[in-house]
Image (cartoon, rainbow, N blue to C red; front, top):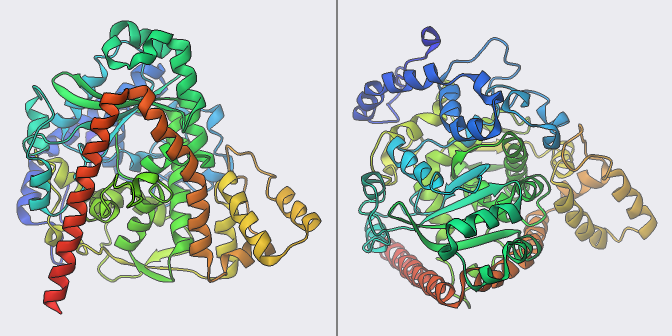
Length: 533
């Protein structure tokens, strides 16, 4: 195993090094650590019991992504073997060994500092109720501002009573609540167990029993039950509980885009599940295709990732300036600070799509280049954003170009998630004034696939016509808003019940404060631009 380990080295000889030399010394110094990951992580372990495999899958994925390419690979990037979408039925997956390839979906495992990751894992182990799938997300895990002065203001107060040293270092003093999502198999059983162990986590709803709590979770909003402002292991967290089936359904069908939208941005998966990994790869591919439909022929990486990151905020009432619930620069801040992580997540997908390519001579020739900056950041004990000068291609990233051929565009439309695609069809049925009987035939032809897979779907005349419309960015955006608006609004209202009035008010006030800071930041940037002009 060790003989196949590929040492870390500068990307392309003769080119200016995209990462400073001191990063390489740190990378080389940890090569032995990565070798240990390779040694103790084997693919056979993924077919063991679901609890053991899910808790160790993050390490296994890290090791897999460090290994060189196998001659058995059918495509240049093994995270996406050719033809995997044609049989992507997550309902039949029970073990990682059943995934399309041993490296499949390893792009989803974003690299972060090992000590910080372990601190978050220790939080999970404090719950007796079984957690099948879990990820940490948000500004407590990945910085959402490349502006360090703005970040320091936001982090001036730590919510953590007694945080581990790794959390304090990663958060530069510890200024952010850490958000978690827990995927569980049986909602009522999970809450029953957790309410016995942690009754103080719940609002007044606990007095009505686990059955009522599970019904509130599954029946209102996006199917997530949040408990905010909870201290575990000295760390202040917010955790959301959601059924595994709900996660997979949203990832593959985009019926609410609540969980799917969060997983379209960098998150840290702490316990993995093979069904979710497969469904999430479908979700990520759909996010790229949706963004391509909204972008021009030529664009930059930053534009692509900004479009993708913005999907989950379209239609979200918290982004409405009248409510003042979110930072208006939230999407831009996320991409500016996390571009290397977006690369790790999406470059493997871009390289396997036939209708989009990097159109930039600066793109490194070495395979796996998209992971180098993320590895360097993971070796740091601080979660600060990598300086723009140290990012390959700069803050805008590399240039890309997509094929605007009607057939290619039509195929993208045809391969959008089923429920979301039908909303787009209805939009254009009105515009094209297609008679009801003719449109029924189109819908019938468009429902010949299983919602849990993509059976070699190709766009017909209707999809090609949609794909070439000048207003398709607006039409796609409208469908996103329709998908998100009601689930997000009702989920926010449900938060008053699940968190209780006091915690809900505290949460709202913190969001408003973030919104004010974002507006001040935006105004400052506008003034700076005026002075430059």
